Amino acid sequence: MMKRGILAMALLAMGTAAAGVATPAAAQGAGHVTIEPYVGYGFYGSLPRNGGKLKAAVAYGGEAALQLTPQFALYGNYQRSKPEVEGGVFQRSATVDHWSTGLEFSYVPRGGAEGMFPIILQAGVGQARYDFTEANIIGSAPKFEDTAANLGLASALRLSPRFAIRYGVNDYISNFRKDLGITNQVFVNVGAELRF
Image (cartoon, rainbow, N blue to C red; front, side, top):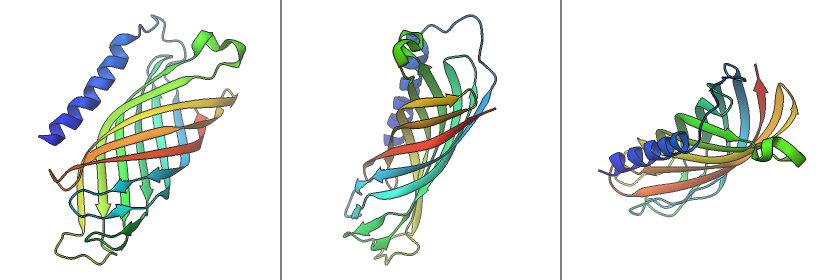
């Protein structure tokens, strides 16, 4: 039930972004691909049902996008982090992977006049994966994964037609161990966006 709710939320956000903005008839600027390696910092919070608290940690990841129109792109994202675990049934550390794919919408206020930066919105669906193999586990499976929604807000400082510094915030909302509860993990990130 919770998985369906998260999936519905992600699809609703994508549909709202697509329906709320008229795209230009001309597909100027469409067809290019961007690749962005990035580094982030994640704020995890507590895991449901005595799973302990995951401390804030550095994350490393990458994103690729295919521009469909000047405003819309399809993207795929993957990141990994290794937060320390405090309390609960898991101890020491965990490996946490997030991946998602979805729709990205970009808008430059006032056509970029007066140095305005783009507003980039993302909505996607994927998975959150936890690996507690290195942890001391009391009566629990060491690995599990669940459906996740990814909602993002970003901007970019374009230094050339093919290079930009991109920065933003992503919120991964997922189930934890089926229906034990919901996790809400927020990452701030900065990366180098290469356009081809």
